Length: 341
Image (cartoon, rainbow, N blue to C red; front, side, top):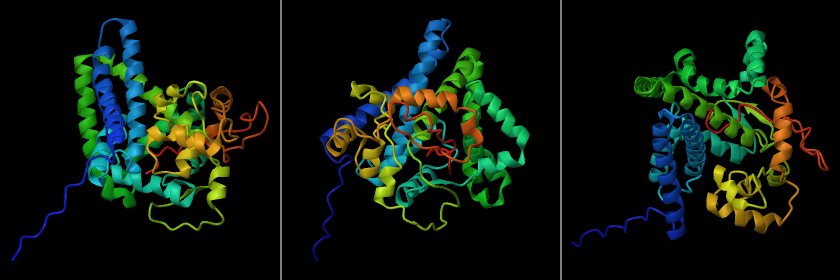
């Protein structure tokens, strides 16, 4: 009787370009995050500033690498994407929920063509107007309080909400682990602990800025497994309510600061396309000056003017026309793929 023939081992990457691009960004992100703590703990203020910026940049890249792993674009094997997603989620500060929970709801965002949330923070603010005023005051002062709330709810809900109790071991374990590491960081260098907090705030600002203006989708509050009727949300609806916020069209390399996440129409057209293919895909699909691209300068203006209104606003607003087309685009809170679980 002949021995069973073993199937050939699966490759880790899909091709050489994938291997080079993804290995490089994973190594750079991890090394930058670890190295930034030495800079943040230095006794020279300018070095601390560099450390904060480096740490924030590493955490932003880690967040978008979680997104890549969720779409299975980092590695050829799902298990490798899952492991990478867990590591990058830890760096990004979102490890209180498992990678699979993050992935499940984000993939539903694509399938259902909607913004799905499991925690209705606006209902909470309606019940507690004092909390709403506190958040609005903090947002006015450019503190990303609403995004902080959305991340904190991932931690506290397993403790206090019966339906979330199954997630308690994960949340509690990460709370102990991350709390212990922060304690050690503070004992080593109180300065590093303080400026690390600044890096986290900067990361949340960057992530919210790009998330806020990517869609004018319908928003639904539901459990991850709840069914949802499509109600006309077809591919045409998806592209008509999706926007690309590039850092720079003239200098495409700058978009690597957010791992090409600004090419959002191209990403929604082909979610399986890895980050390094998106600029070419965007060019092939939309040409030189697509209407869906909103310049960074316009979005910075509306992000600033509507920073308080965005806290409890019930609508995203809408993109207008002409040079000031972003003025009526209020944007959204609470739609980050890292915090809606």
